[in-house]
Image 1 (tube, helix red, strand yellow):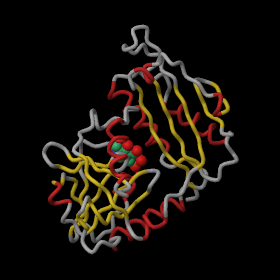
Image 2 (cartoon, protein in one colour):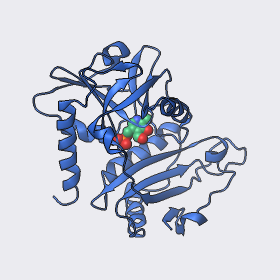
Image 3 (cartoon, helix red, strand yellow):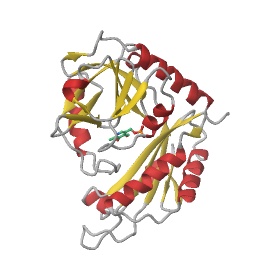
Image 4 (tube, rainbow, N blue to C red):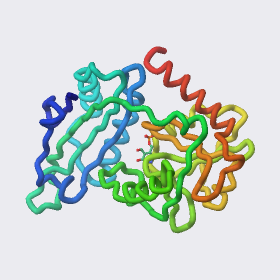
Length: 279
Ligand SMILES: Cc1ncc(COP(=O)(O)O)c(C=O)c1O
């Protein structure tokens, strides 16, 4: 049994409840954030809490807690689940109960759920993975809103074809990000990642600090036609780390193998997370 934090209390996961009249249930109005532990410590906690607060601000949801308080609650929830080796942490802030069922009243509920971290298939990392594209534009893409309708719909299509992720392509044919990942393309000695109209991924932020010196960073948009011509593509996320992409829809990327430069960045990321909390 795991222990969750809900609105000032620590409860067994099976006893965790929120009112059905909360507008997170009625309207999908609320925000969340997700992080993992390395060495039993929450990875980039401050960055995730800051993004959580920003998501709330972006959708007009008033936060009642300070950054420090939320960080402390996350740490205490991890401490109350000592049976986990490593953990996944989900923070949720609800819209709260509203008399008219639509207008936020500033009475949101903060939840922190800590569950065991799971491993994704090794082949994704050694052989690379396939992704598909989805012609969808997220509403307020800089916010991690609880409403992930576009993600759930697009991912179902991806999974049907054996793909691990769907990446959003906007009306201007720009490839923006995945349903729960950010994207990078490498062409020659240039590494490219979209600058805006995306969720600013914390993993993406770490990768940006670890780019090998022989690669030049370009923060700019890529059209789908250019994306398909990349030498290497990879996706990043807290729960996936860095996954090399070898196929987009029916197009094989370059040789169809996990790229060497991607593998180098994966090695740097591995070293960074292995050291996390120790140095
Ligand atoms: C839309 C979207 N983009 C990117 C990401 C990756 O963000 P992070 O690296 O912080 O997990 C996520 C995470 O779930 C996401 O939902």
